Image (cartoon, rainbow, N blue to C red; front, side, top):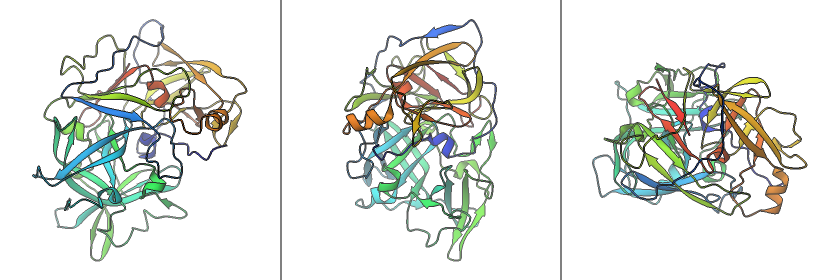
Length: 407
């Protein structure tokens, strides 16, 4: 089997949202969700191209399956000339905040300002993932330009991964056998554009939950000086933030629009549309809304069991618990299966699960697999294959209150 990593959603990896089952969803009579009639917006001041194309060709795991990438332009805060455009940034509707590899900025002349606490110490962040890896680096302030420069977020705190601003990594970040994923080969992207439902890195249901020292996976902040870094509680305004929420307009959500595919495909191009109901090209229309619970989840009922669930472009497959044959966590049924689950309380969604070994071995240069699925214990994940042929809405509020998915 091809050596491809299982990329279980970034929302879960920035794991302050891994919490007990909630009660999200809507109500009403049961309906069946088939592939809807889809219009993909390709132009407008709030539209940006996204591509599922395997990612950076230089990484060992190329091509990466079912991973959406885009380009992001950042500038020194207050400057319109000292800027850099970073390509191969992963699009993730499951986490908030922009995170970029320092190596992706190495060829630029940018001199970015590091966020500081009230006492003048610089702020750093550690994110520990559920697979025992982590990322570490300073929080710096930039201006972010998207949609060909038509959508601008000023003074955005972002996370710079693998930066040499701090000489040492805190021991509470680099614990045990944890592996650092602060380079292109390990991360598989030049960064992550987190456009999830909250503005702030550590706010779920209105609570500032970034408390250093809690059990991983979690995000933790530190104050750093020449003497080293110590854990710190960081205010919302200094946390890594979702740049979309800081736009002057079109700041209440994002629509991911990718065309349908009938089988393995070399690559795929679609759109990321900013705002919901703010322009003529981003109306909610007849899409069904599914409210997120206080922990950032909706419900999915599968095989009679209710699971905490997410719809997330940063997850590269369907992830759920089943007895289907598997290889290294990927499902490998002898023939393609047609399954169904209920999202919320009333929307029946059918999906197909194919043999991952066959996909990777028969199509070694392909990046799009609409039937890719893997095992997940206790959660149901609707990853990027769910997005193919659907326009999927993720609403954004400052602290994640009253947010929803829709499709």
